[in-house]
Image 1 (cartoon, rainbow, N blue to C red):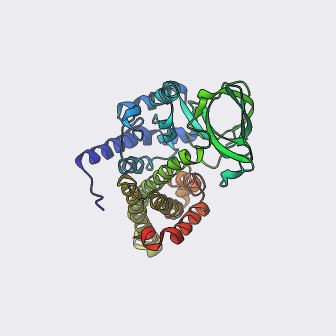
Image 2 (cartoon, rainbow, N blue to C red):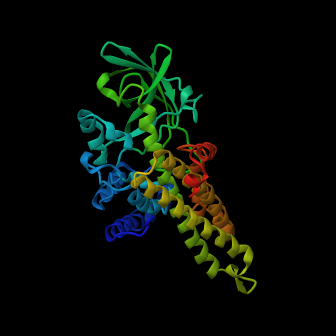
Length: 389
């Protein structure tokens, strides 16, 4: 396994880093004080800047208008995205990987405008009574002539301020079978109602509203993929997104460590730098080890995905990366808040914001408990050597 970077990959990483440091980091405090809501023109400026930086749609294949980045290259970019608070990377135009499976007409209506930063589609899976176990989803899609009629309620429909459609996972009844199927649903369609737009623990570019769908009628051309294909299409995206989360968490830890070491080596108490007290420096040393481990786990999973390794092994490796990186990043944030003391508790300090924001990485795109379940099953079915080797 060769994890060294080519000149092109180094250039991509530096381009992403410049965008994060020069465009996104300077507005972190403004964004926090605005409670995660920017004026529309300001948001458009950020999207234009991302397009000019060559970052828009990088994760998607070139044949659908994306940048054609390998999974390893995606990791290099998301490591940089993790070094900004507020989830401000959400202003980079793009689309969920599942839209790769869109028809030509669906691409024209949904994918192409998304890559231009004009639209964005949320992924609507979770429901009030169904989270980790998608088999219990209650949203239904019933065939009516050439149309489908959708009924249900979706929670955590995550997307930035230009989100205006959702990819809805609904169950299609076929005799006794319930077939999970995806549909493209515009927010302005009759029967679509935002029931609640709650505030969350973090101040984020993405909102997570709740929607009710009541007799929403869509044509069969709104179906994304085949009837019953939702799980296969979603699993592809979940694996990649778990690798992205691992990358962003390792990037967050790198920034937290940089801030913590800078402060601890300058702050003097009792006539000594606080860095010289083991109670301060040892937790930072532990987080340095965690950061390196998280980065290697994530890059390994990406390298295996690009190398055509067994998808089940890649799935397990992605879960390992997400589990370790998300748990370690939250601990790192807690340690760095402690290093800053009272200053670490101020919202103007990135460490405080990270402490709130990193917590969700142990929940979304599969909780830590789900990741442990995937890893445990893989140990049994694939063998220890393939999972950890």
